[in-house]
Amino acid sequence: MPCPTLDQLPTPPPDQTGWPWTEESRPIPQEGPGGRSWPRVIIVTPSYNQADFLEAAIRSVLLQGYPALEYVVIDGASTDGSAEIISKYQPWLAHSVSEPDRGQYDAINTGFAVTDAPLMAWLNADDMYTPNSLRAVGEIFATVGQTVAWLTGTPAFWDAQGHLCAAPKPLRASRALIRWGCCDGRGLGFIQQESTFWLRSLWERSGGYVNADLHLAGDFDLWRRYSQHADLYSADVVLAGFRRHGGQKTSGRLSQYYEEVDQCLSDAPDGRWIRRLLRNRLLRQPVRLYQAAQAGRTSVRYDANRKCWTLGG
Picture 1: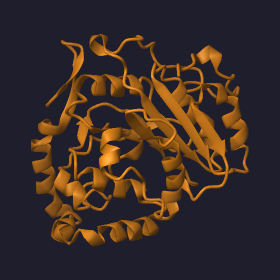
Picture 2 (picture 1 turned 30 degrees about the vertical axis):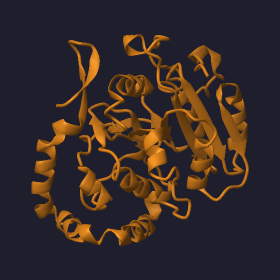
Picture 3 (picture 1 turned 90 degrees about the horizontal axis):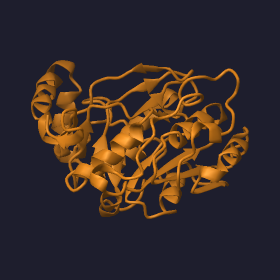
């Protein structure tokens, strides 16, 4: 369904300015690159008692102006006013619900089942996309989607007030390293979930679910399954940011996250030696240098002269 413009959305609180309150993305042509249709994308936002940040997350999706967006919000029966926020934006949602569920990953599975859109991602209720990010994603998949099934952008972070405060280099990791569990934050860093998009065909080949028995490491488990079927391509562009604030699950439950990671890795004994190596700061450097040297094979860049996205460094 079409995205709204800024003047069609509810008026933001008087103390909120800038993106995504008083700014919007650049207008997007109705036709995609080369006259092709824009790939339909489903974005799912799982939410539970995140009213302080939920409205900003919703607006950061809707103000993309993307012509082929199907946006779904699955709320787990919040008691903090989240349902009222969702109701304000109901006219522009493909689907929404506020009812008890089994947690974040169960909500995501429910949301993804709503449509058959071929391009998929989820955005947690306390995170945000950057302006124009869905245009970049749509252009990439419309242009090189026959090669790229799984894409991530440059990791970035928002502070609690919504200021974009850091943008490290894109993560470079081979399929083997991802499958062996080396991208768990203790070795090569994280694959930033909110900056990652993939084709439904890859989702289906990998089982078609996020493991709802996990509470914190569902994306880590999903990436390992994806790595069995496709390379992760990296784009040198900031697509989204993880919001750092005191109430988020991972900030106070890191030990539980790593317990779940290690549980997931019980089926990867062959990768044990490389994981141990990468957890040593000195020994991991040669692997990182090698990955950087190989980065051109799985990178996507914007060619300003040709005005299109291309493969290679």
